[in-house]
Figure 1 (tube, rainbow, N blue to C red):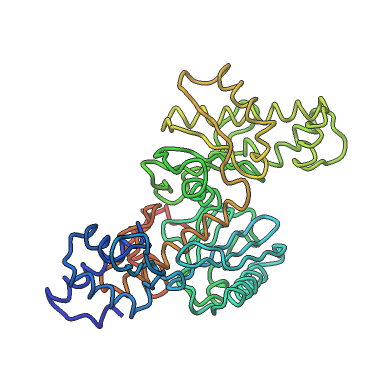
Figure 2 (cartoon, rainbow, N blue to C red):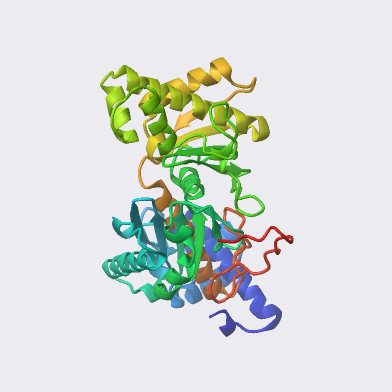
Length: 418
């Protein structure tokens, strides 16, 4: 759509002005023309022209009238909720969850199903089926969805496609991206699941005003979503936050220090018969079972060890306890704080419970998908280029498949392979 604008300085100025108007409406709307004029510093005529174009291009619509002001009632303008749609996907170890959101962030439809374990093709078919179901229930087709973001239990490369250490995916995730792309017509980006939980914590949870924090996702494994200066820190090749492999006195180097498997080992060591799940263990602990309480305490001590190790390197303002195991904050949080106070490094370390207790990965994926889809819609409507990067630092300069352009190639021997 941006090609419809006049070439040269006049067309560029119109694009810049239209984007300025759109940004003010997006940030502060619904707004009337007088408020938009004051906020942008543009002339009444320029604002009126920009509004006509934005309404015609269906990224802005009328949101009633402001009858509280003196004088004639003013028409209010807002970002049109249906100008962009995003698809969030959470591929978990056991289930696949999908949500379609509009430009205003409203969840229009949500669905989930067991995660097929047979092969990548079956998993991709499940994602496509759920996405199609959600798009239909949302009153739009898949072709209208501007971006998909898929959370996976794996390290995701700089390009948002390559995955490694994908133990929770069929065939180690080999061929998964290509299989999903065959079923989904929109641009596609993958992201580590704990990173997306950190995005959700920043946008909807306890860290809305926190620049530096670490979300510790404790579940099947242990991972950290690291936010520094308000931006998700992925690392050079996407591996930042794989703290489950930090050295620990009770484990061999290169093995995971915490997660469902380690909790099961601790349960056996405590003399608990059978193979209780972490959920069952924590329920037993709530009922006062001393052996289960010992496992809870050992888990808390390992979480404290990891938090103290991270704090020595980046010293975040907050640690947030999340994930399926971390959600048991009533049992874990006090014990984690106790071990930190008794044994940790000489740094102030604050640990809080997650403010997004459910569907954190899916909510983070849907938010990022909406963010990208809106930027494309805004750019197409105004002729101004998209913003330079998402909140996690991934560039918007993408090719026709939605893949970031210009990513620096890895050094020899450091390729990001599946």
